[in-house]
Amino acid sequence: MGKGRVIVMKRLMITGLLVASVVVWGAAMAAGQTEPQTERHLLINEIEINPPGVDSDREWVELLNPTDQAIDLLGWRISYSYRSEGYLEIAETSTIIPSGGRYVFVYPGLRLRNGEPHVFRLLDPEGNIVEETAPFFDERDDDKTWQRFPDGGDDPYFHDLWFMRDHTRNKSNS
Ligand SMILES: [Ca+2]
Ligand SMILES: [Ca+2]
Image (spheres, protein in one colour):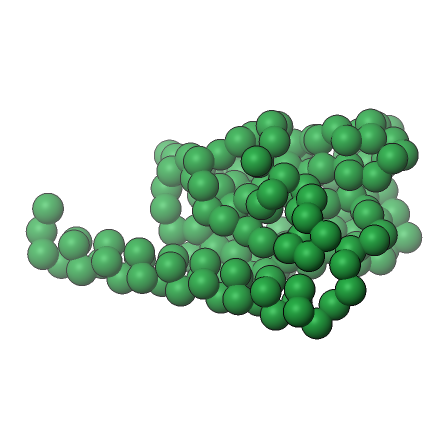
């Protein structure tokens, strides 16, 4: 491995650690300032921005329904970041996530930029932003993903804590 490459990799690792620290710090700040979470809603639970190899048709988000009601994904939208920013319909027809269930939405084509932070947003059928993540990026061309921990943010105080870990696609993050 050349010296230049080592330096680049070190820079990437330091950048990754900094982002992880900021995310954890942000979650801790939010936890200190807000009441315990009581109202539950459809969640972005895991994000694959930069899968190994070709990214096209292989970027995804895992959605989780932590409520006690089934949710129809028809009309819900998720943000994208490449080549411009905007929103995509998650489902073209009625698609039910049962209570406690999850659904993996695979982005069509190439939709997520790897190296620049993007705040992921989830919109309900009325156009309300029900969720907004920390700014995430992923320069590692591998199976690691951003994951909410514990699964579903299922902690009354730390419900917005994220880590970069080996993927748990369509499975619990915990
Ligand atoms: Ca990508
Ligand atoms: Ca998962």
